[in-house]
Image (cartoon, rainbow, N blue to C red; front, side, top):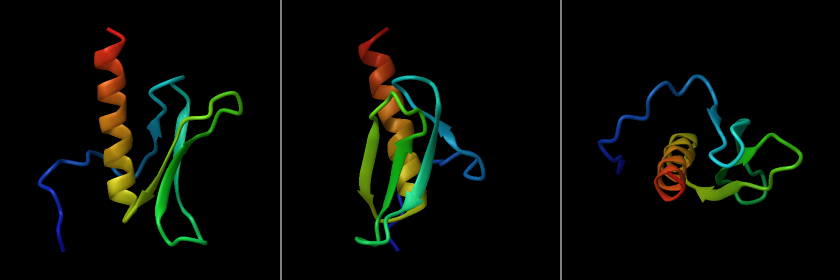
Length: 73
């Protein structure tokens, strides 16, 4: 299995949306079989999809948060 050597942190708990700070859920899309993360706030449309695993979806969410923070510092 091709796993990057990136520490995923505590995978038991959810992560926060980089746009609004609300919790973001990671779930499996039954139609495609891939994983996605989605902001839980109704007013926020932040979403990431097409990940091969729950771990990759959470790593992508964390990376998105870092990039977003670097842009708006």
